Image 1 (cartoon, rainbow, N blue to C red):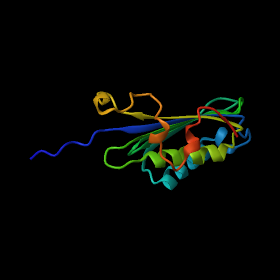
Image 2 (image 1 turned 90 degrees about the horizontal axis):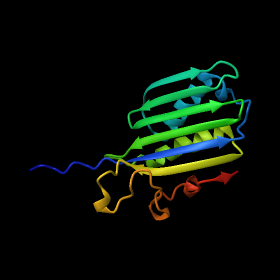
Image 3 (image 1 turned 180 degrees about the vertical axis):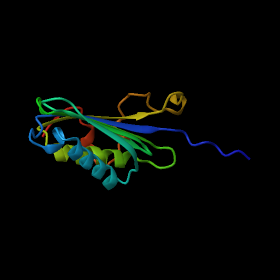
Image 4 (image 1 turned 60 degrees about the horizontal axis):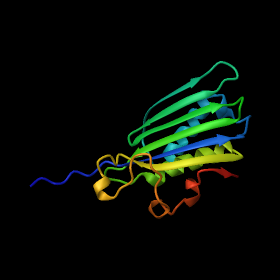
Amino acid sequence: MDLPQPRMTGHHVTADLASCLVDHPASTDPVALRALCLEAVRAAGLTAVGELFHVFPPPGGVTGVVLLAESHLAVHTWPERGVVTLDVYVCNVRVDNSAAALAVVDALIAAFAPQQVQRLHWERGAAGAAADGDNAPGQRLPAAARPAATPSVYASSKTE
């Protein structure tokens, strides 16, 4: 007897941070950004399997990527503008990693202490699932479908 294959879905969380702490070491130091990202991943219970961090010439923004067993984390800093962008995607085949993705984003937001945050969260991998009533890729999840643990994560624009 063939067992049904679990449907692949994922959750994609992005955040644009503005008016961040300009003197935060992770804004210009790839070693500091790496430590911050790996700790956020570890604390959320996700599994880092690779990473790459690159510093740009002065003013020295950093781009960092952590490859996860569950998918990825990408961070880009622009210290001259006080801006940081975050991108976390996790697959949810046998385990729902949505809360872990939100925890990573929340930890990084707390570290950079922005005055403004724009966050988006959407279901991915739902192509062909329209017959099941699922959201199309890129469509925001309805409020009732969002995890209750961190409802503020879904504000499309927020000033903190």
